[in-house]
Image 1: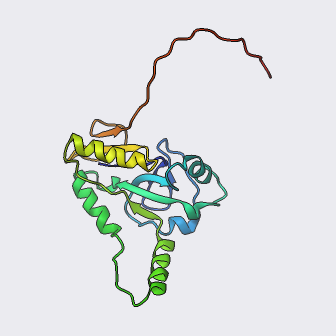
Image 2: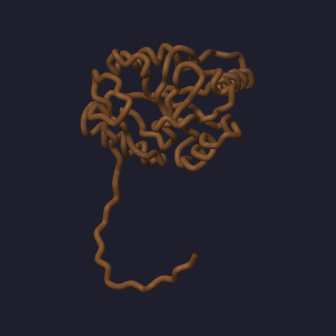
Image 3: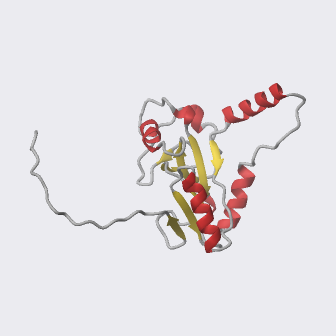
Length: 193
């Protein structure tokens, strides 16, 4: 399972283009695309942060290229390896984008400098996956994500192959609030043109 991000779904073709789920091309600056690996396609979300869908949408749907420095490509799958199982694709993603190593440095200033340099160059982050240990674990993770303004969770069927559309091997888990009401009256509104 992983956090369900509230970003803009995106596919990278492994060459030089990023597209929406419906095939509409996005126009990131060249320096963004140049940091993506060549020869492998990626599936993920263009994401600025939690509770920032409108800001993300504004940046990535623009043709100006402005604001992309705040955007991360949060990758959760590897379509170019669709014959592999989900777990095998995750291993390949981790090999492509290893987590930064923590290195002991002599002082805080040098450590902060190394972190800043690493963060400045990274446009891709692999979405963290956690093996679900059962319903209680799922509920705990959902509460934790939602406590930090996250939207929900995504559950992936173990051993599943890549499917580039909605499928039964991927399940969205969110809390929905529902209420019942009875209309007891209304007041006519005014029509304006």
